[in-house]
Length: 572
Image (cartoon, rainbow, N blue to C red; front, side, top):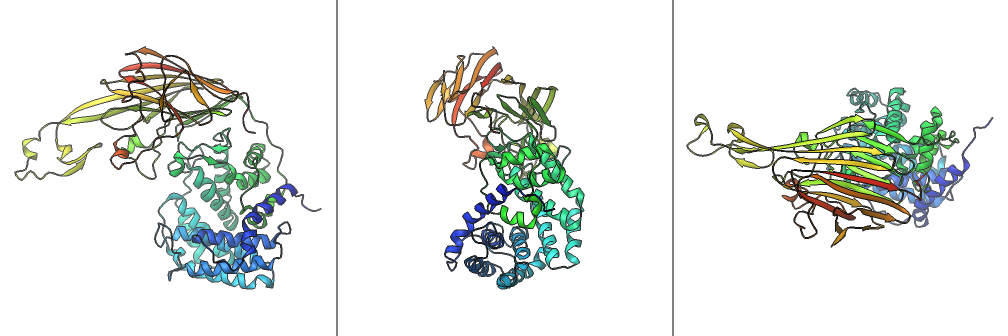
């Protein structure tokens, strides 16, 4: 009995591939432009289109000619080491591994296609062979690179057997896959999980027969389920990579949710796969993936109905999500900055501690600035789960004034060590000096509700200005607040309503203790301050959108009531 196919899916992936490949095939002699990874991906798509009966380029000589043109350009980009030139990473084994992975996949597709692709097959083999030695001995500089490089070595071994290749892969895998108890990889990045780590581990599981690697992917996909937001994106606020300040679509997860839903029968994965394809299939690489992994073309199992309301707390990232019929709310207190005391690539730095989705009305970010020694906005150092829906986020900032050096530490030449004391660097041998410490504590308690959230914010310590920033996604305009111009508003003790169509978020603030809130004339207070780690370099991590501020001078305690109504419903 023939294996049943999801013909609608098969046709859709062919159309997506044709959208990329057809213009290339229309002018096959045109000189290709783009980095080496783009050239290799185009070759893979052209070969897949040639192979697929559902593609308009099936059996097309034009597609073969375009692939050869791209392969000549790709080979010219290989340096004598076999690694590819281009990009900001010089002589990079992992960057070249991305390209070699596509080259090897294209080789598998071309090698089985008959004599018309013999020249393509030979060119792909030449490129792969030239890169093998450098990838075999090459190093990496990010966590996900280990798995991308290992996948390239495994693919090379699959087509060009060499016992050294799986031995090197096992050396990388012996470090252990960097997945935590909650199912998040160490980079906590949706981009790198979906585009690098999950596909690499699935490939390694297939080539090496390592079911533990596919089990790791399943755990990551399960963890991601409750991070899928109503707008069809995946939560990134907790990421340690560049996507922590970006919106990232769900569709790159499609092949992984689809494949594991088919293999395991999981209805929750089937639902996620359908959500990932809800806006159509636009990834031209999916056609090649279906030819290399025909299981993807089988029908999905029945999708589970969404369970509402539901809660998920990820202790390792200190991130909570609460989802009801009207509202999707995220609380986050897992920044690396309080412990590392620096802003750095590879750290989770986003100071957003709350998001709220109510249909088309979206509160993208809630942030709190304090003018305390320019140490930056509130980033929780500790997160406590007080009850199923209640969380307490806490940060204490401590800095110091320094006393004269003890006699035995003084130098006649005045040449003391240049030291960073956490906020400032100077040739003053700070650790050798007695200190007078100054501390400032911020506590935020959040009670998540089916119709919004209640916040209690307590600011203690010396009297300093503070400002709470609520950034709403464009599409509406705050009602009940005073405009400050340039997309900025001042909120007072009057309720604020942000409405987009029939969806709305209502906010009300009450001062429990401390002086009254700052008025719209206090623009010196009503602003977001990214802190000196950004401003010393002329940078910022400020949000964009409709920004509403309320602020004052601490010590102060206030409550914030957020109530939402979503008439338009959520994305399903």
